[in-house]
Length: 298
Image 1 (cartoon, helix red, strand yellow):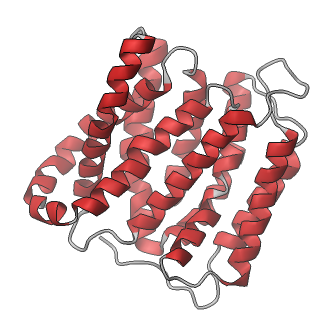
Image 2 (image 1 turned 135 degrees about the vertical axis):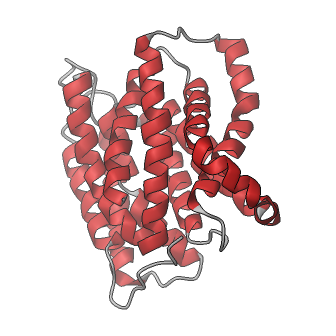
């Protein structure tokens, strides 16, 4: 499940980058989640209605999960895609499993020396990326686009996704997976409504042509409904930090896809940065001695 989500999400970074000059970031996020909501509604709407009293009782938790995992995370990724190559975004996101472990530590779990070392290594890799820059657009070949503001947007997105993943282990008992997805997708879409209205008023809408509609369908159905269900299930079975170790596949997949589909090249600084980040993920997010397998299966 974690591998499926990781592979599908790799394509969403490339999609965000491909749409950066045709669909504004907020509008990408709004339509993504509206499509995802429609995709999951046949499976989750009735279950969410039956569990409405439980959802209301835990409304603060649902609101926070919706804000981090739906409204903020994807919007920040789309904002980063305006100036940041897809491969760079994938490298930065590869640090999220170590952050998941850190958030679990803040929640009372033991971090340990191994995960601390992983956090430091991944942080060094991101710092190298910040200082050295990475990647460029097709044909640039040279120094390419530096980390810059887009990389900072991705760091914020990484923190949001890691926080969301850590929250999954605290999902209220009895709240089913599809009901949770439908509720968070609906809440996140509502949270995006004011920003969507402002974006349309200021930036105008986008042309609904195959080049914009098909990528939005991909991120709405595959990267949202399918991938989030798979990821949430993986975290429920083995926990956020254990599921996060699979995430090291993502930078490689994103780099290959962005090279094949967008013609983006990877700068020299990105290679040692990727090695440090991925090494930190493998060391810091793997199962430690005496770790528990995760929360109950739902």
